[in-house]
Image (tube, rainbow over all chains, first blue to last red; front, side):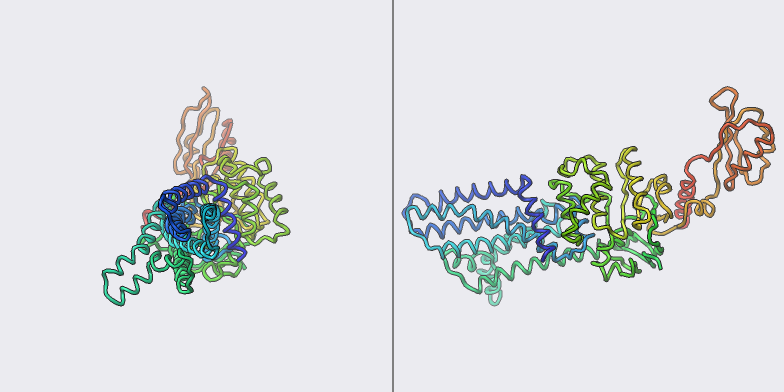
Length: 242
Length: 313
């Protein structure tokens, strides 16, 4: 755990000490703000809970995009710059490297979500919101972001550079995002399987309405751990194959 | 017992053999040079010794620990500088070394002391608070050595440590490597012959993934050098017949020297005949201005071995 945190804290430092972190933060917050103002609030009268649900819906897209951009560099950049050798030649396990990298991007994404809290706070100016609803929505944004970070981190272990990692990560995210469409056109049992595996639809909607189901939490946690373990195996196999 | 034992080591990438059946031993405190052309397999051997690349066959033990099965223990024993120093450009030198120290299990209470020591040893105090991205190539290489030394490892592995350095930086790097003698076991790779001969106690010559020769420079010269070129600058009449008849001289050429009355004599000999040639010239009353061997002795050995290797395969 100590090594994992050491790797995570260095990586967090890299997010805050380079333009990369600030550019991603600025882009995500600007687009989030525009979507909130244009679509979530809109000129039509709405209940505060509906405004909040719409905000979470649009923010979920940006959470996934941010996850891809935050995670694409995690391993691919180390390979490009040759710094991965430092980790490989230190008494650090592949799992510690992957979990440390994941933790850094996840914490940075939480900071981004934290900064966006002003938007739900604005809803309070003219309406009433439930703090439980806000907490559930943000929990899902965090889980969705963490899932895309884990997927792109896996792609980053396979890719020779950041661009390929981003494309690979985006591909995985799109596949898991659109599985619900596939679920509509296939027969059982694939209908249920694809529907259950879809990252957004069935698992996200309850959260955005302020409802937290244990099965959804388990789904996201399982998906995150699955891709982190895939990333770990990918690094281990690099040691075998070179 | 040797500190490092390598036995029948091979590494294949698909059907391509990067390393083939390499065996050698390295004793504690030695400075060992891996000499070979680019792509000979030196870096692959070093990566396997660094325990972050698994061999396809054979075994390598470091202080009794297997690089395959006891990776954590091996990684604690080594400091590794790859051909490109593994530096995070946004970090300051001191922060970077502290980070590496933590990764390498240096006790928290001694980290600052170790950082101070390696900064002094690698002469980095002037740039200690600069960000790594601002440093020149020479300084970056030194930081690379500093990170390899930070946990005071028993074995230091340096992959092409003088690559891209200017002549002054090369001298500084050489002095730094020599200062490690006795305190650490150093394995360095290079394709620059002169550096290997100046810094290493023993040389392993690698060609196409095979270990083609090993030993001290003088031993290699005796065993593998087919001929040695000797140059002598003389003034006065040259006893051509006697020089041609000297035992061991294969060929003798005489050319006009730079000064009007001097001659340059070139000999191709079976071995080191400098003493015999000097004695003969002096005996014959020739004024001997200078005598020496042409080029690097190891160069001849290396070229002969590489040529022989090409012929055999």
